[in-house]
Length: 448
Ligand SMILES: [Zn+2]
Image (cartoon, rainbow, N blue to C red):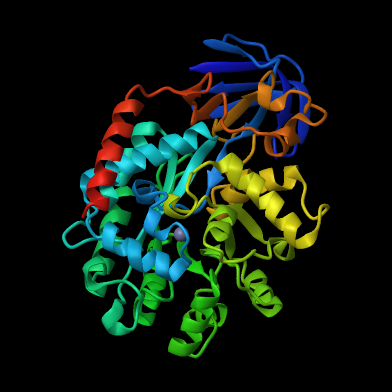
């Protein structure tokens, strides 16, 4: 298909062309072929009038746990901090199965698509006995909605009996984990340009994974040339745990393991000292900032504005600690929360939107083909209709309005040249059926 987006009222490219008004973008198959002020010549299969639209590159979400959409807003942990929240939820999650993984991945992906996400990562770290294929099912679920996907094969190897946090029923042996890493990389990882599916490896956290597995995972990532991801420095409890168990604070522990590494991106990074930030900067690690989850669990405010110059992105985090997967809201919360810490002039809406787009592409090392609207990049494009109640009177800065006003969803979402959201609705036609199944599975899990 050849598309022409014409008369785009406001185009924020996050690329070398910056911001354009009354612009044109052309797409052929899955690639952007023209960006500019002049109408391009040629025949198009579809011409889209964008004279009332703001257009951006699609959002890139770098931290999520799709399966947690089944356990949003669980009453028992509505007011819990991280460790208590986890200990209670492990008991529900231990019954996760293949169907639950497929349906929750499709539902979470749908929610993200509606809020403008075109690429998402995920960390699936919990495998009840014999259930390695829940990983395969989440790939099918996301692919059903049409998102570009960079899942991480998560892992937990240190249960209560070894001084970790999770129960035995949800951790795996190191041998099984390593063989599953190999299986999913060889089956799914596509390193090519415009890839719709790449795999990374993700031991869950310092309090659920052994030192040995952290090192073996790093070795495997280097051998297979894939990225690495984990949770780090999320809470004060984690700090205390690491000092007690390893004699080191989390960032120092990562340094010891070789994990301060350009192949790595960390989720959270809330409880940092200035010295920690220097070390992270010096080693070019990526940041997945998760403001909603940090607020919901009372974990603290990540010092993001002190990390300027690093590769910074946003993650909605799992829906059990958000309790939504809305990227527009995540970017707004990132902007507001940094202002709480550093003042009103600390961050502009454009900077927060850059974290959500180009920043995410850089963290996932995919900025050679996503993250901005440029000729030669993949056609991952979102647009908002400005003639709507939520923007009325807020059009002095139409791009900024997306975060300053009450935008909740996109009107248009194209991923790799395929339209996924049109007029604010998903193109797939079975979302009601998925929601029904999702609620039934959720009920079943909560009832044990
Ligand atoms: Zn997380």
